[in-house]
Length: 540
Image (cartoon, rainbow, N blue to C red):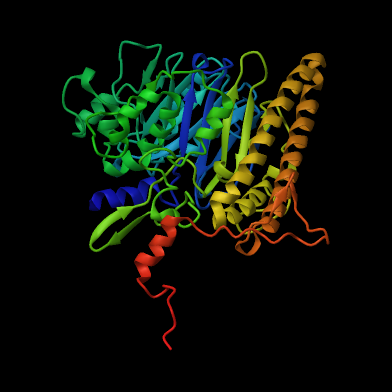
């Protein structure tokens, strides 16, 4: 139990280490033939903004300074590529998309002498790759030459044709390079990962769908992590053995997405709850229906609703069924250790996205900031070269509020919702649905427009399109925030009629509704206070 608490505090839910969630959808599993990768960058110290890297040419001998993505610490220099591609967020101009989740792994394998950290690996690979396979080659070659200095990491890597999971750990400084394996998700299947290594068996004969470091098995055998035949080797069991904390806090998030894509995944409920480690959840599954982008967006908003782990149902949700738990997530009562659930959607998300990698049209980064549950995805074409002001780097930060920064406006609305969640989320969901539906329609029209105009004018067109969508979404969300503070001020609920607040014949507000709490909450008050608050006849 003590080990489990350390696992949760240090790996799964730490404010320093990212606790993120990814899902991957192969083209054959999606409704429109696109590949998809989702990502939530969760951290208590990450500000939500849209990164941008220009396509550039460099003279021979140019060196690139490397800084740790989480801390900004200088790590060293590497040789710069002669040409780099443009990148918007985590997608480049070719539609290649890369995301990650940190699983930590064995502490002794972290190589503090390496130059390349996981964040630098992502954004350098995006600037140097035209396909997912090329990105894998770039990433593994970089760490082979310069060393890998981060903890164990799972990467989602995809293009319009295929999606891959690659997992990587260091060698503890004993030798340069890293230990890694990459698995192509089969056509028609979906996968996911969330801060726990997910790759087990490797088919060493299948060079098309499995790539790996040449010493991935021999190193584990030398260090005593594995004994047996190569065909029985499991990357996860050797380099990041699961325990109760990593299953319940990490794999459970993958399971909560899987059950929405295939109902048969309910068979793994006890595994997800940390009750049965023998019935291990597979790396990928075949969904029982074609997956849409909107469905993926909604999966990223999940709090285990409808399952035994539903965060809106237990006492921790309070009177208004709030699916959030403030940190720390582990606690002690009466000498026993307990925990709060860690769902896909979480309040400390910096930014999130659904990368839509399309074959016939330019790929789109559907990008949002703050908690996926209470924010809206904005569509940005992969060849966009100007970042809208609302999501631009430098428009506010975690210590500087900005009324025209998307991150702060979405946080403002979410913060209000915590006080009366089960009421306010209905208002939020209505506007969220309307906006995301409208964004879909606007993309469809823009695709047609781009097919009609000269290619040389595409850049200006998609730049203007991105700016318009960001401004439009933020304007609508500001209006929503203004409505929420008026409607729910002081714990009341103002009466609405046809979308307007109702007034009396004398132009005064109609007396507000005062719905109170549900019976379960009232009972908890009585259980806690006994007869202290009982209404009784006054003795005279």
